[in-house]
Length: 254
Image 1: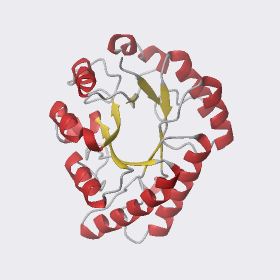
Image 2: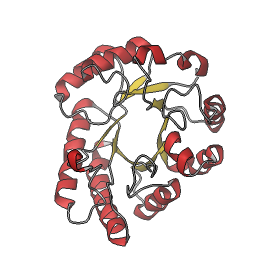
Image 3: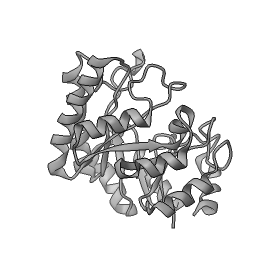
């Protein structure tokens, strides 16, 4: 049976993180994940997780100066000290909340120096995370929503994963981003499955609930079942209104 994780970066954004975790449980989700949980004390987040029996699948490293448009620092030359501070913070928070994965945000950068910087910071993150049984994720983001983001294709991410060769470095395969940049999702999922650590989804092109748009998630989820993928799939979509009113797809796709 296909299972789902609620991405609380978009779902129930009008509630506190503990309240959103409880809402996800009430709605029938099997796990949760979030973007930036740092405004909530990890002890409070852990208490909500324990009360609901849900697992926190993953969190992101901080973006940096969001007022200046920053979306991560780990591929930005000259910002290594800040990037590693964000990585350390995310690892500590993940350990305290028993989260499984950390998405290390690359940021706005380009070129060989940025690639070297990202590799160095990812190696640092993997080495710190490995003894703690944490997985480091990297995620390609599309250039329509995130112009200038360093990591934009699944092939680019796979090359980095293969070069770094750390057992705990995996790909976050977001169907929304990959469809916009590359398409051919069924083949890409099959080919990249050995390096995939988490999968997310949303409709294309509007990033809404997965019950409309140019992708057939009924087909994609069936293909993942055939491939033997059994981890919860991350619902990272923007509800058009109240989150609870957008959840009709869950019963259909289970």
